[in-house]
View 1 (cartoon, rainbow, N blue to C red):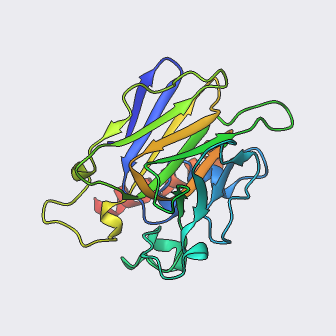
View 2 (view 1 turned 30 degrees about the vertical axis):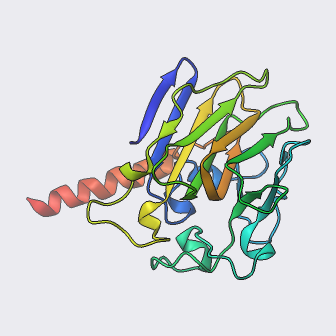
Length: 229
C-alpha cells in the first residue's frame, strides 16, 4: 500500500517497507528540518526528547526506550540505525510501553503539543517493528486537536506484511512505516498490539523538489534517451 486518500483533508501513507529514514515518505522534510519540517525521534539517545511530543499524562503504563532500560532485551529496531542496512535489527533502540506490573502494554500512545505558534503537526508517522500478537490486527489511530478520530479504518493484519516465503524473527521485512497527513492538525497517535516501535516522525511540511533538481533530472533522463537511440 502506498499513498491513499482517506477522507477530506487526510491522507494515509503506507504500510510500507522501511530500512532507514531514507525510506520515509516524509524524508525530504526530515533532512530539511529547521523547526518547520519533520522531526525524527529514533530513540537512540535512550529518551523521547524531540520537541512538542510526550507520553500522555496520567497513564497507568509508562513508555520507555527498550535497550536503554532492558540491556538484555531482544530489540527489533530500524535496520539502518547501526549505520549499515544488512538485515540486522538488534543493535539499536526502540520504544515500548510497560504496565505497572512490568509486562509490555497492548497500547502505546504519543501526545503532540502545539508549537510556539499554536500549530499542531500535520504529518505523523511511525515504524512498527514488532507486534505483540501476530494473529491479531495492529490498531492505529490519529486524533485531531479536538480529540476526534482522523482515521476510522486503522486495523492492519501484520501477516499481510510478511513475505510469502516467511522471514526470520526481527527481520526488517516484517516492519512497516505507517503515517497520516491531516490538514487540521494531529494531537495524538494511538497504537494497539504494537510491542515495539521506532522512528517516530512528525512535523509541519515536506518541501517540494526544487526547480533546479527537476531540471537536472529532466536533463539526465533526456541524455539516457539519446544514448539508447
